[in-house]
Length: 110
Image 1 (cartoon, rainbow, N blue to C red):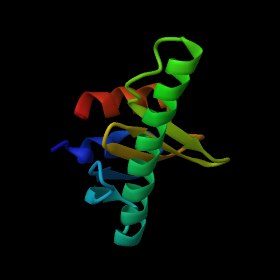
Image 2 (image 1 turned 180 degrees about the horizontal axis):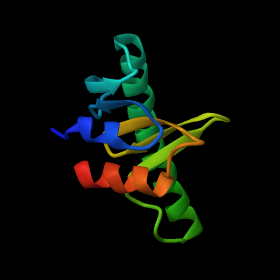
Image 3 (image 1 turned 180 degrees about the vertical axis):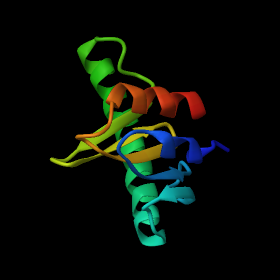
Image 4 (image 1 turned 120 degrees about the horizontal axis):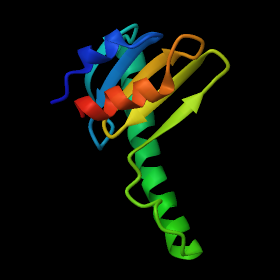
Protein backbone atom coordinates (compact mmCIF):
# COMPACT_ATOMS: atom_id res chain seq x y z
CA UNK A 1 0.00 0.00 0.00
CA UNK A 2 1.21 3.50 -0.83
CA UNK A 3 1.95 5.99 1.92
CA UNK A 4 -0.47 8.83 1.11
CA UNK A 5 0.75 10.80 4.12
CA UNK A 6 3.72 11.84 1.95
CA UNK A 7 1.31 13.91 -0.14
CA UNK A 8 0.57 16.19 2.83
CA UNK A 9 3.98 17.85 2.32
CA UNK A 10 2.98 19.19 -1.11
CA UNK A 11 2.51 22.96 -1.39
CA UNK A 12 -1.20 23.69 -1.68
CA UNK A 13 -2.22 20.28 -0.29
CA UNK A 14 -5.89 20.02 0.69
CA UNK A 15 -6.55 16.30 0.87
CA UNK A 16 -5.81 12.92 -0.66
CA UNK A 17 -7.51 9.60 -1.26
CA UNK A 18 -6.29 6.17 -2.25
CA UNK A 19 -8.75 3.96 -4.09
CA UNK A 20 -9.09 0.44 -5.46
CA UNK A 21 -9.69 -0.32 -9.12
CA UNK A 22 -13.35 -1.05 -8.38
CA UNK A 23 -13.89 2.33 -6.68
CA UNK A 24 -13.53 1.48 -2.99
CA UNK A 25 -11.86 3.96 -0.65
CA UNK A 26 -8.61 2.49 0.71
CA UNK A 27 -7.17 5.46 2.65
CA UNK A 28 -7.57 9.20 3.01
CA UNK A 29 -5.65 12.18 4.39
CA UNK A 30 -6.16 15.90 4.99
CA UNK A 31 -9.51 17.59 4.54
CA UNK A 32 -11.23 14.52 3.12
CA UNK A 33 -14.06 13.21 5.26
CA UNK A 34 -15.64 9.79 4.70
CA UNK A 35 -18.35 11.09 2.33
CA UNK A 36 -15.86 13.01 0.15
CA UNK A 37 -13.41 10.10 0.27
CA UNK A 38 -16.02 7.66 -1.02
CA UNK A 39 -16.98 10.08 -3.79
CA UNK A 40 -13.33 10.62 -4.77
CA UNK A 41 -12.66 6.88 -4.87
CA UNK A 42 -15.64 6.26 -7.14
CA UNK A 43 -14.93 9.26 -9.37
CA UNK A 44 -11.23 8.47 -9.75
CA UNK A 45 -11.63 4.78 -10.47
CA UNK A 46 -14.40 5.41 -13.03
CA UNK A 47 -12.36 8.09 -14.80
CA UNK A 48 -9.24 5.89 -14.86
CA UNK A 49 -11.23 3.12 -16.57
CA UNK A 50 -12.83 5.59 -18.98
CA UNK A 51 -9.46 7.18 -19.77
CA UNK A 52 -7.93 3.77 -20.51
CA UNK A 53 -10.80 2.92 -22.86
CA UNK A 54 -10.58 6.28 -24.64
CA UNK A 55 -6.80 6.09 -24.96
CA UNK A 56 -7.07 2.61 -26.48
CA UNK A 57 -9.77 3.69 -28.92
CA UNK A 58 -7.92 6.83 -29.99
CA UNK A 59 -4.63 4.96 -30.50
CA UNK A 60 -6.37 2.18 -32.42
CA UNK A 61 -8.34 4.39 -34.78
CA UNK A 62 -5.85 7.23 -35.22
CA UNK A 63 -2.76 5.07 -35.59
CA UNK A 64 -0.99 7.47 -33.21
CA UNK A 65 1.02 5.63 -30.56
CA UNK A 66 1.74 6.79 -27.02
CA UNK A 67 -1.73 7.07 -25.53
CA UNK A 68 -2.11 3.50 -24.31
CA UNK A 69 -1.62 2.61 -20.66
CA UNK A 70 -3.34 5.67 -19.30
CA UNK A 71 -1.72 6.35 -15.91
CA UNK A 72 -3.64 9.36 -14.61
CA UNK A 73 -5.59 12.53 -15.20
CA UNK A 74 -6.31 15.96 -13.75
CA UNK A 75 -9.49 17.94 -13.22
CA UNK A 76 -8.92 21.64 -12.69
CA UNK A 77 -11.35 24.21 -11.40
CA UNK A 78 -10.69 27.90 -10.91
CA UNK A 79 -9.22 27.42 -7.42
CA UNK A 80 -8.70 23.69 -6.84
CA UNK A 81 -7.45 20.75 -8.88
CA UNK A 82 -7.73 16.99 -8.50
CA UNK A 83 -4.58 15.20 -9.66
CA UNK A 84 -4.68 11.42 -10.08
CA UNK A 85 -1.94 8.88 -10.77
CA UNK A 86 -2.74 5.17 -10.78
CA UNK A 87 -4.64 4.60 -7.50
CA UNK A 88 -3.84 7.87 -5.70
CA UNK A 89 -5.56 11.23 -5.87
CA UNK A 90 -4.68 14.57 -4.33
CA UNK A 91 -6.64 17.82 -4.08
CA UNK A 92 -4.47 20.94 -4.32
CA UNK A 93 -4.92 24.70 -4.36
CA UNK A 94 -4.02 25.91 -7.86
CA UNK A 95 -2.40 29.13 -6.66
CA UNK A 96 -0.04 27.30 -4.30
CA UNK A 97 0.95 24.06 -5.98
CA UNK A 98 3.57 23.06 -8.52
CA UNK A 99 1.82 20.52 -10.75
CA UNK A 100 5.11 18.99 -11.87
CA UNK A 101 5.98 18.37 -8.22
CA UNK A 102 2.52 16.94 -7.53
CA UNK A 103 2.87 14.31 -10.27
CA UNK A 104 6.52 13.62 -9.40
CA UNK A 105 5.43 12.89 -5.82
CA UNK A 106 2.44 10.79 -6.85
CA UNK A 107 4.62 8.70 -9.17
CA UNK A 108 7.30 8.23 -6.49
CA UNK A 109 4.92 6.82 -3.88
CA UNK A 110 2.71 4.57 -6.02
